[in-house]
Image (cartoon, rainbow, N blue to C red):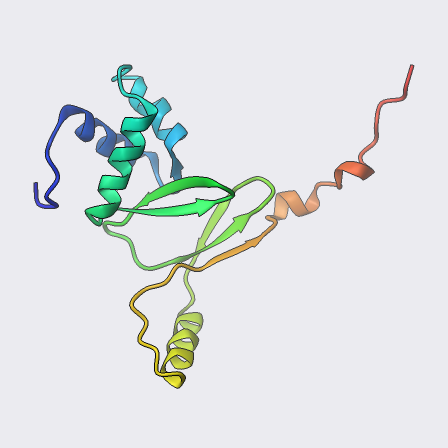
Length: 142
């Protein structure tokens, strides 16, 4: 293929599922989708195939809270991420101002940027609105 990957029915099924699944997919997410049509495909095959896609420039890996998430890299503009440490939700954003500042800072120290990943950790609106566990009403002891 164009990205120097051997073609196989399993890889094509994984690529198809990956393309349709959206962004920030875990191996488990993809496993559930692929197994609907290919029950013989295992977790290791999914992971290895996603790593091959990453090596071929078709996917990008995000390590969040010890879990690998993958997103397609084709037809995508550069973007950064807000990651909720409570529920795991990922919000993409673009900021020309942040990009400009990074370049200015790098130029000021003689550093040539070749790429970056920007993840900002915090809590999303829903999780901020939830009362802390300690403050939640507990059922009365009987």
